[in-house]
Amino acid sequence: MIEALLFLTPVWPLVVLVCSAAWRFAKGETASFGFLWLTAPLPGLLLAVLAEPDPAASFLELPGLFLGALWWLDEVRLVFLLMTSLLWLLAGCYARGYLKVSQGAKDQLKARLRSFEYLWLLTLAGNLLLIVAEDIASFYTGFAIMTFSGYGLVIHFRSHEGLAAGRSYLYLALLGEGLLLIGFLGAASQAAEPLMSQIPLILEPDNSLGLPLLLCLLLGFGVKAGLALLHVWLPVAHSVAPTPASAVLSGAMIKAGLLGWWLTLPLGTSNWPEVGQALLLAGLVAALGAGLLGALQFKAKAVLAYSSISQMGMMTSLVGVGLLDFTLWPALVPVLLLFLVHHGLNKGSLFLAVGMNERLPLRWTPLLWLGLVLPPLALVGWLGSGTLNKTLMKGVLYEAGWQPLVFWLTLAGLATSLLMFRYLWLLYLARQQLSQQEKQPQKINFWMLGSWLLLLILGLLTPWWLPLSIDNFLWPDQQGWLDLAWPVLAGLVLAVLAWALTRRSSAWQKWVPPLGDLLVVYRYLGLGLLKGVRGLIAGWDAAMQQLVAWLGSLKSLGLLMDKISYQEIAWRREAALIFTLLLVVLSGLLLL
Image (cartoon, rainbow, N blue to C red; front, side, top):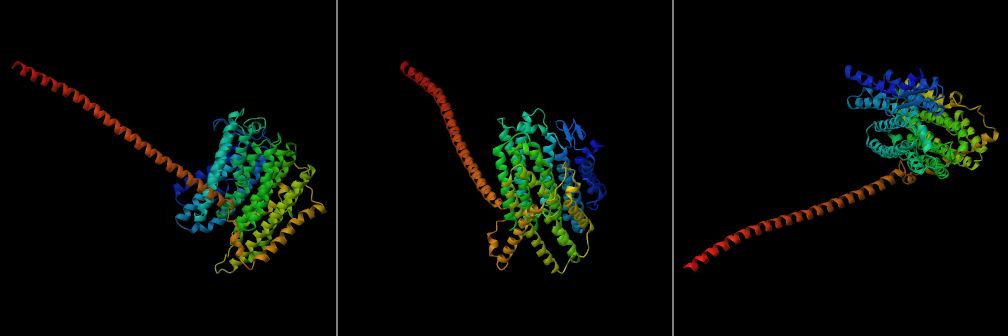
């Protein structure tokens, strides 16, 4: 049973894809997003619910696949699989209602819907494969399929802005995939077996190739995880992708970068002080910087994208702590697992709420706002999973003597508060604009509403159903509640001050960094580099043309010399004949 579910987890979405395409080809046009399409994540979800988090009990060997595939589940993979399958399932149900609006369209839009269906299934298959894969070939295949199929989800609407965002996504994806390929090939060449569990043994400090390979894998996965300086694709991609695609991009797919670090870095086995310090610093820069940049955005999904960068920055800093002190890693494992599920589901519900804000009839506004404020309260630590997550994280760090890091993470919580206030304000403005339009939504789409509400509830109650090896969750004491309260209250004060100072003038908007912030700098540097490369190529071409011309002149000279040599031989023959004739004539004259 477990082996069958392990096999079907990444394969079933591909089966659904083939069946859907074959049915369309045989029967002509059929309705999009059918029930078979919705079942694609179910084997993965069933596996996460039924399997034991033990590789000895939950594994599958496929000797004929790649170099010998091995798929299994341990505690970490099980939690990733459970969160990922749940989010893809509910986002898929949401997509059935969200994109049904355009199903009455003809030709081009129908073709886009079909491509969205198929690319959704491909991306899902890759995401699930990399989670269960233990062999390097399967993991890299899943990661690459997820990455490049996700490009099609980003550019779904084919707008100018969407295509530009897709290019940014693709450039960073190619950079990340190249770094991962170098890291995996280098590690596999030294490993006893081409397995993910062998890579941390290669990346030890005493290995001369350990640091270069570690940096390749760290940066390669960092592209996906939104690592500072490599994060620029996230805001632009999330802003233009369809809402359900944004939910899985931010909630599930960026967690693949975190899983990659988890499986390849020597966490819990050895210290890398320099790398750990750099990762800790990069995480805090992302956590704080993304909060400030996101609070200046004008699109709700862009604010959420920066919020994801900020939250992933906090997780990155915890991974950095694990590289600084490997003895602390076992205590950080449940903290990170709870953190990633809490963030993935709550952030997914926040993205889906953007679509609900656009589509829900105005008479349902009170219910909408009740649902809108709950996930932000969880993210800032005032409710449900957020409260327990922050309490557990601070408890572990305090006990290990990392009080300064707790302070910086608390400041990151202040940044999260600013982001959530900005997000709610933008949704309020959008709702006000909707109320002034002549054409307003009149019907409830229960696919959208039901999936959003279920995801919201699961996100808030994460600690009570997530299978984690934690003895008990402790609610914060009075001092703990004060520690959780002041960042939110400070964020509220700052948000009100910002509103009061900027509401009468829009002059400040020209100083706001463009969406993607450093992306503009990278484009400028890239264009300069491209111009330089083109100049080098043009110079090379000119030099080659001169060389060819010179060689051509040498060839002409050679032909001339050959001609002279030929004429010289001819002249010699002719001179001999002339001298012979002259001799005959002279002899005749003498005889006379």
